[in-house]
Length: 395
Image 1 (tube, one colour):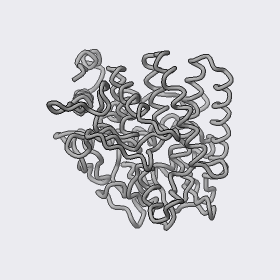
Image 2 (cartoon, rainbow, N blue to C red):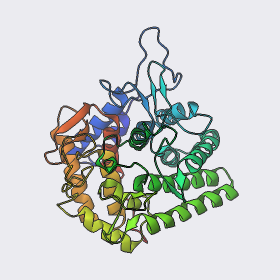
Image 3 (cartoon, rainbow, N blue to C red):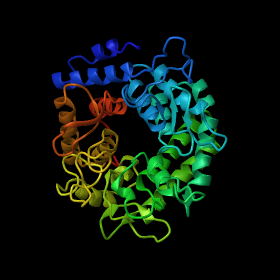
Image 4 (spheres, rainbow, N blue to C red):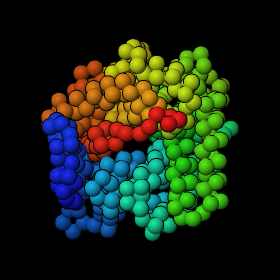
């Protein structure tokens, strides 16, 4: 188990007593979730140390969980953070895709992936502790990963989750599962052929990460190419995924061009990714501040959606990853009061569940739900507490 005590000691008296306790709980959760081999067992990712999402439910290394875990533990152990990234990159498929999960018994799920947040996480880690050798190793793998998404998950310049067209019986499950929002109301409308707002925002973040890697490695032509792709995609998001009639970014069916009626935290990802213009951000911020929709708990579907259920997995509870991206994006665009209330509400919920950090939270009462001792909840507690910074767009 890595030692985070010196890091915590260095932060003593910089936080309130409650937040210092939450930070310690988050660090303890992530380190306690490092999978240890049984007697005589060699874990499939040996010699790296893999962090599981939770000990009782998820015994393996999951794709986007690993990225979030890396961002969390990088605050005190960059080697452990890079292990999470290496584990997935070592299992990269010939197509460039990354697997969904590697279980501790060696089974690997490769039929679909997860949202492409790993390059963003790797850039985050490198900015904390630069490592040219690691970037030289990871860069070509991330370039192949981008190529997979561009070749296999793109229609008319915008990205969608896996539609599994070769197997119509599985199509719906694939899109939902690759999104990570397994049973979300987003997928209830009868089609999963959606340009997804969150995915396209993640792809902008991926391009910016690749441009950063290229800059660090002295590859100016690559840097310019990825910067251009980020700008082109950002423009298409603003053109095609903002519904002026609703004043919000919404998923859109790429076959009918109809906007989805479902409001979710994905609507706010263009703010976190710094894609929205100030005028569009102002309209989106009104949606975030509406008590009938997302205020103050940032549920995974709007409070007033007919299918909303405060305790049903991705159909209404609050998840810390989607809530953090939404709140931080609002803060960075200058909507500090709305963002601070979202943050304070969610941290208060985490604190009131004294038996541990949970997978998700009832978005009315804050009761912890799902798996306990959950890794990415710990990672985003750390981000809510320590990385609540940034400037307003344009400053």
